[in-house]
Image 1: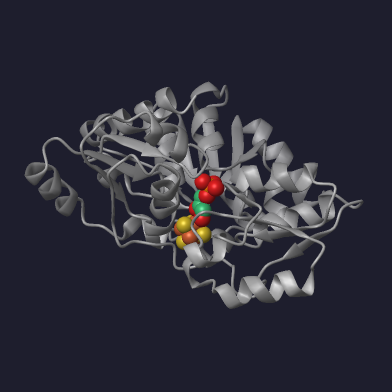
Image 2: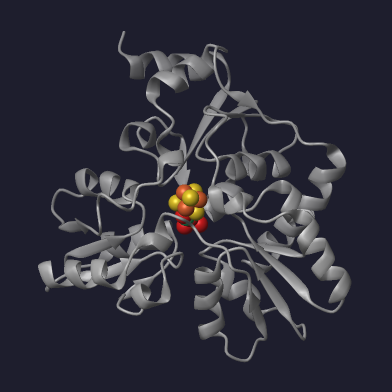
Length: 302
Ligand code: 13P
Ligand code: SF4
């Protein structure tokens, strides 16, 4: 029996569903029952029948699923798969800011720990940030932690008083304008789709700025070639999935999130056999406080 067949059988036997973020390698995407960007994964977590969920992604994504579906057993296959940006802020600093600015609203990018979400008012994802922040009414809105996504929203919503934190994704933020100009020069006929975690001097050249799911939709619907300006997992899956279309990588060797590449099919099989992975546990008090900001996101993001 092949590894894939083995995994499919074990999934059924153990009443397990596999969720995978779009940055996962193609061999993991192929095994998943649900794939999507952070927003889609969080939304779908509320309606899952299976008892167990294996989350192929990074820790904050597994935490978000556990926050929304506490009755499920949520397993992160690689316990050391974390998002460096999610860990960038000590929650005490946000608590301190709120005490000093009681009328401000604190918006947390979903790429944050549960402990950080618990100190914030509302979460957003890259696909829901504009819609949600546009609906907020406060004299000041603190956006944590990503200065690039926050800066993109601030530019689009000039009437809002948005204060930025100095955080960033170390992968997307390493992209330079030179990388972008080189790709455009190499593929003059192609459109450019980029993730808003990239720096402002890069995204200003893009034809679409959006979440991973929005980039995938744009690329599939485009009748012109598209340069995929985000973590390379998106292009790794898109290229073989759309043989009639032309997609190009942007800075292929640079846009790799090592944490997203820690999960392999062998590891997924071992999780199903009970030999690997970490079962997420969150103190109930923390879960409920973090849930408030995710619930606000789901309510305002529709
Ligand atoms: P999405 O919200 O587009 O899924 O992005 C998550 C992420 O980690 C981007 O680096
Ligand atoms: Fe975090 Fe960046 Fe990796 Fe996304 S690509 S999980 S933001 S480090």
